[in-house]
Amino acid sequence: MHRQKQGGRLGFRQAIVHCWRCLGWPLVAGPLLASWPSLGCASNDLPASVEDKAVARLKACGLVTSGKLLLPHQGERAQCQLQCLAKLRSCADVETAFCRQDWQVANDCLHACYSSHICAGVRIPSDALCDGRVDCLRGTDEAACDPDSLKDCKEGEVVHSSQWCDDHIDCATHNDELFCDDAPRFSCKNGTTIPAQKECDGELDCAVFANGPSYQLIHDGSDEVHCPGADFFACGDGSYLEKNKLCDSHNDCAGGQDEPIDCAANTCPIIPQ
Image 1 (cartoon, rainbow, N blue to C red):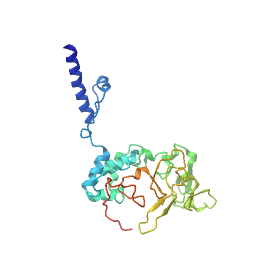
Image 2: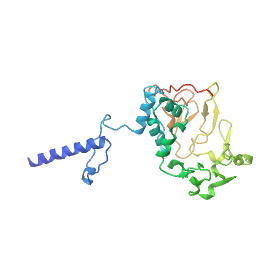
Image 3: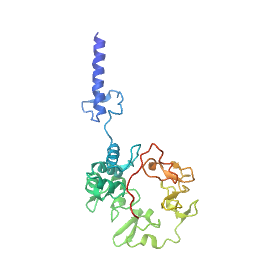
Image 4: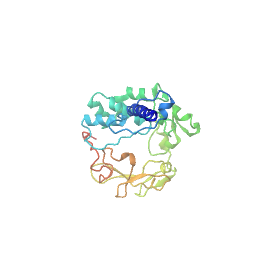
């Protein structure tokens, strides 16, 4: 009888811990409770994630249809964008942030969310530190990592060496792209070339515009798919996508293979070019 009573009491305590965990509350009652095994939570027991709340907000504002929707969530920048998207009060602001990718409407929320570096009085996300791109005018977000990686634009501005001769003007003086005729380049399968430093950088850069009025970029993947650890989605027509673009409510494959029927559809208004 004593063993049965003790077993029943343990089961009751485990049930309490189970409910506590499913509510997402921290276990602060000591190591004994924390050491008990989780019994597993039913899907309707789990607290809504930041991503779930952002998706619910988009659906409530009529910007996506019902169905599976995966939003970028890796890194502090993406996490804060999801958190702030869910907190925007008006659907007009939600549309501006999500459809137009204009996050000015959530600036106060984003700056309060970012936990890391401050430049010019503004916080930037932790994943912007030492990422090979200068976000602060004087490069303070990159200087602590490798001071020798910075190049001087003149007039008090610097950029990362990976931004020098990368076919994109980053210096206000344009100095980073003025004398690049002899810079090494990578030849893409589609006949275009890209700066050599963009090969195997984890981003698809070998791209051409698809035929038709959509102005859709088609990536042939030749700069990335042969690289160690490469993991991209093949559209089936010779083009590739980063996997974070699957089921994101945007057709990125020319044939829409990245957005199967069970994915939510984007209903954003057409934005004039």
